[in-house]
Image 1 (cartoon, rainbow, N blue to C red):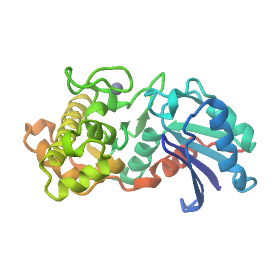
Image 2 (tube, rainbow, N blue to C red):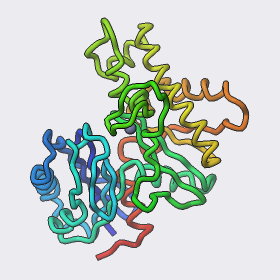
Image 3 (cartoon, rainbow, N blue to C red):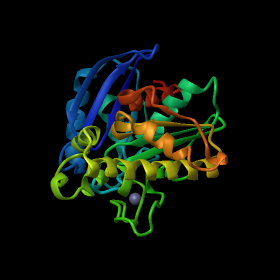
Image 4 (cartoon, rainbow, N blue to C red):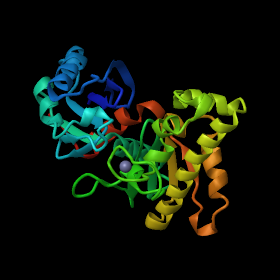
Length: 293
Ligand SMILES: [Zn+2]
């Protein structure tokens, strides 16, 4: 059965057709409306999905934010302009006339990575380090979503009680220290105003401040992994996102983790699905839940 998969992120909206064999075709991408008020997002989705009419039998959505019973709420107002209680599932069902399932994007990616590794592991934790920091947790072959769909929002675990205020309103979250946005925000002097990509590139060419900013991010992710090992006894960590997949970043996290006691050691892999993890994960989730028209 062909699935229309949609990925709703802070900067772009992506859609594609996913075949029963999980091949991706007719991928389209548009920018997320800068002011994502409910009407703006509805119009953008209408524009994105129009060419897919009649080409799929169900819709699977991965979206940033908290997805509770098909309703989208942005936890960090910097992502999606603070959309509050947007009826995502109902809106897309109305636009397409198809049954639809919605999942948080990091939870979807975690499910995709778990399905890829499921012959070897039953306990997998996915961490995405990108503009923000997110995650998804699979325990004993089940994705943890929680009663309010909040499970796995590991970017909002506290890393430093004296750290910067996070976009969610809490002080010193992992996201406020390790994310691409946080790396850029902490830059001073000649690096002020540069984005995370530019700072990574300067770090490779030997800029000391850039290297320190990357190391500070990797340290926060290393400590997060140690905390997750203690909490969940997860069998492996999968690292994704533009920062998580940046050259040398995973190795730096691994080197720091290796300094900790043996009980905290856990293998760390790079994400298999990379940029299509949301689209594939949401599709796999719709198959798992047997969503059909
Ligand atoms: Zn936070």
